[in-house]
Length: 358
Image (cartoon, rainbow, N blue to C red; front, side, top):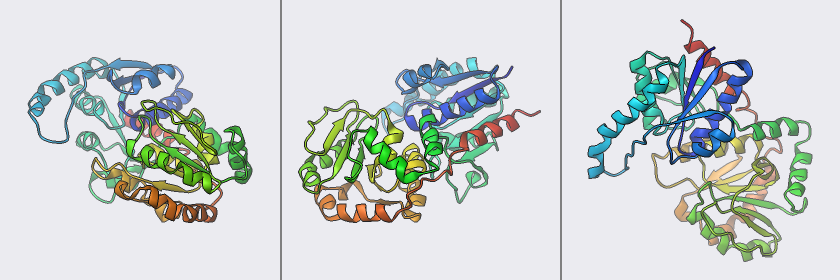
């Protein structure tokens, strides 16, 4: 029996791919032990136990984007986190890291313990933690092609999909048009009216939410249905006409399928799930970070299934001027989804199996 440690905490973009790989590993190796590393402040505290996997919490290493006196604590915090990781990693047969602040100390602990490391990078522009990990291993997988550096030689595996999204893709293969119409009805919308699905994000995007709420009268005047996920931390606006707001969408697969146009951030997981099930998207990348959200959507733009605008340009006036064009581009886009990421979890698990070979 092998022990597999998975490091990917904080956001859904790190946790969900890790969970997909863990589920795939359990199918092939039901007797193996799988342990997740995480912190007390990340989504892993709910998502991992809900998936029936073990979670070991480690101290978080906080690194502010701008220089500050808090940077003086980084070496001490990092050492504490590495030690906590080492208690778990030292007896593992392989560590699979997915980036983020949980992965960096795990990579260091695995290196000192002589444990093989496998890295999966979800974003088109590798993050700092995975760039650090890449110094210690050649077993690297990516969701997007990377043109330069060590990641340019990585396995192009795609991004592991959540179970519900993968199942919805398989169920829709035979009749995509029928699947999209049926999804609208399951969500409680007319099968005939165009549907706009707005993703405020797991925490909610103030910028996107404010613009959409201000455009409700316009949407209603156009006879559109709108499903607006505002995020769990935000107040839910009242339903008006064809506009309906919710704090969180449980049936995300149905929302992707049903929407004629999706509006949201272009995080790695969102782009992957949209690629599998969506029709057309308007992406408003997060204006902070290292620019990865602009790059994540590039292939979808090239396939004429999405367009990208700066947050400063996403206004009520923009929607008024461009809504008809977005719906027209959606109608011209392929009715079918894209299965490029369907086998991603299996490919990453196979890479980890290879890394474990003597």
